Image 1 (cartoon, rainbow, N blue to C red):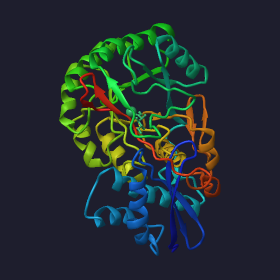
Image 2 (tube, rainbow, N blue to C red; image 1 turned 120 degrees about the vertical axis):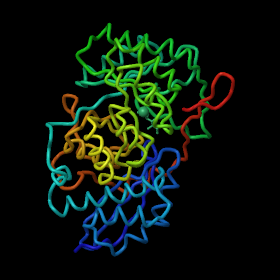
Image 3 (spheres, rainbow, N blue to C red; image 1 turned 45 degrees about the horizontal axis):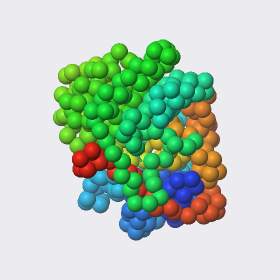
Image 4 (cartoon, protein in one colour; image 1 turned 90 degrees about the vertical axis):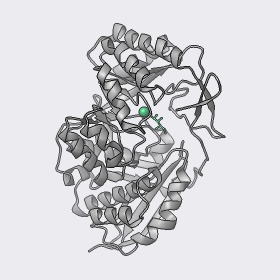
Amino acid sequence: MSRIEHAEVFVASPARNFVTLRITTADGVTGHGDATLNGRELAVASYLRDHVVPLLIGRDAARIEDTWQYLYRGAYWRRGPVTMTAIAAVDTALWDIKGKVAGLPVYQLLGGRCRDGVLVYGHASGSDVPSLLDDVARFREAGYRAVRAQAAVPGVGGTYGVRKGAIYEPAAASLPDEQPWDTEAYLRFAPTYLRAVRERYGFDFHLLHDVHHRLTPVEAARFGKTVEEAQLFWMEDPTPVENQESFRLIRQHTTTPIAVGEVLNSIWDVHHLITEQLIDYVRTSVVHAGGITHLRRIFDLAALYGIRTGSHGATDLSPVALAAAVHLDLAVPNFGIQEYMEHAPETMEVFRCGVTLADGLLNPGDAPGLGVDYDEKLAARFPYNPRYLPVARRLDGSVHDW
Ligand code: EZ4
Ligand code: CO
């Protein structure tokens, strides 16, 4: 038996903030887990340092499921992004350790490969339609088989998903940026650029779009219907997800596939969406939905209903979360697609990660465990940098979903 000897929480900002858990066993084996919750990082760091690490010391590192149950049920207070991200970090680190102890990559422990590689989509965006079209071409030339398209709504500043520099980063190093939102302008404009992408480049690649919770159910139904001719792979988060039943209305009006789940944290948060077949892709992630153990449980439930996976994978999920996602994506039968954004060079220097991209597919490599190392000495040169995600306001000044 290999006992957990210590566990450390690192908070650093190599290009952006990441919270990373490292667990070390008495035999000197280390495992890493991502614990990053964008804009609320220190809450998870404290949950781990102050409440979870003392429970880990002396535990058998091999008992992954038992540790998950102990942390989940043992807290009494359940679910929610802070709790589930903290449990996820422990779970991911223990899978990493189990792989290293076995001398096997984690996907082998999960049942082995179901596919040759993990299909990803890249994020094309533009400040107008011509620049979006150029960006789509850039991804196609780089070998991507699937591209998400987002463009700034004319006359409305701050539309979700438009990259300013080389790396997309919506969180501001200040109080939250307040961005205006005009639903009617978006509903008029977004279908025109999705159509323009298809007119220019045809249909032999997957096209995706993220609505980012901005519409009401009936607006989302209208949007889905309007864009049917663009044959989207999915429209993502068409409406806020708290009311799972509201997706039935969207479903009744359009065949545009629906993807939901990046802000959800547990199987109970998606269970109605799945069992009522109200969505097509479940977007819960390793880091925000309880780790590999719990995400596998969600994916298995989804498989019963013909729903495929499409995990969240923006740059605020660290390379540890990306590697864990790729191992799981490789091993589940109902994999759909994986979101992928390139990390900044500073991030990749701190997290040395074996995941590679070729021909639009990711592969995790065959190193034992997750295949990611964390250089804490280098990380210490990038201190935590408090940042907030933006807040959206309607034209009348009232708060909207960002
Ligand atoms: O806005 O991860 O599909 N991807 C997304 C992301 C989220 C960020 C929030 O931290 O919606 O870009
Ligand atoms: Co999204």
